[in-house]
Length: 355
Image (cartoon, rainbow, N blue to C red; front, top):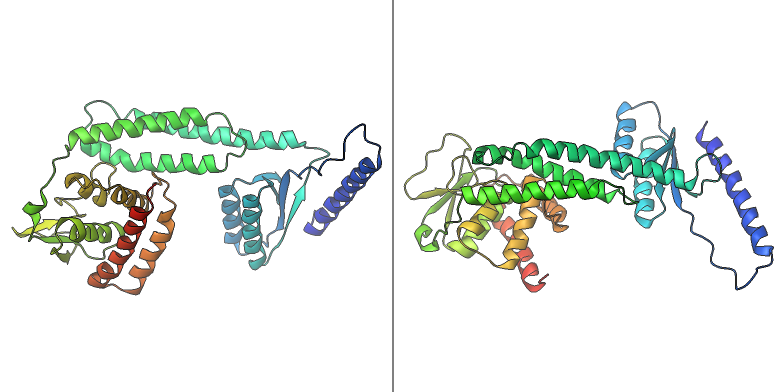
């Protein structure tokens, strides 16, 4: 059935519903006044995508999957009728039209064939399957978190656990009707995060490094600095040694001199530990406990490790700023000077707006 035909059918159904609603308004009421018209429960995206280019169909399919849309029929997708869902469908519809296809977004109520409750059940079944898959993968990872496991093994598990946490967050965002299974998956992932944190803390005791010991040292890191290295360099110069010098070297084969300290690079004195980024490690090792710094650390973590562990809403904006900076210059001194302003301003925001 073509998009035009489907639209005509829906138009006829809408007219039938309108006539029925009109008749009900004319009918005498047993008591009280006529209430507000019930909200139409669903949004439908109806589209036609051209056969070429092939990537467009794949791209649109992935977009619809990410926003949690449910395929009702071929080329017909549903979402609960919310402002956010309407915006999601608008963006997808625009992409389809820009790609040479046709698309309409309409409000609808199911009156024949599928019922509203059956459509809701389709969403529940899909999300329950997602939670079961996350739980199964989490159970597999838990087997790796055995007592006595070496720290290097735990470090290797960290990214997998982070990705699992992100999947859980993404799934919860499109769980519109409270599917069962989330609690079990959430509990197991949280349990593993706690186990990993406890184990890595025991393996790497937080021995504070007095700032006096590192004053006058040259801090060495890899060339092509990005978010974690820029943030760490800003932290070092702002809170550890305001006169610190920095040196940018190749990522492999560099042998440090006696007056140099390495950070965020292979075999560095200060680098990732467990699931902590270098910025977090510096906070811990130097005993920096300012709440604003820890908020900033969560943002850096989410960008650098890409695991959405803290779900910081500031991460996307800061990531775009850093991306723009690194795209416009390869000079690490310039990146550090300009990037430090980003972190200084965001730190000041957190300091003044305590949460």
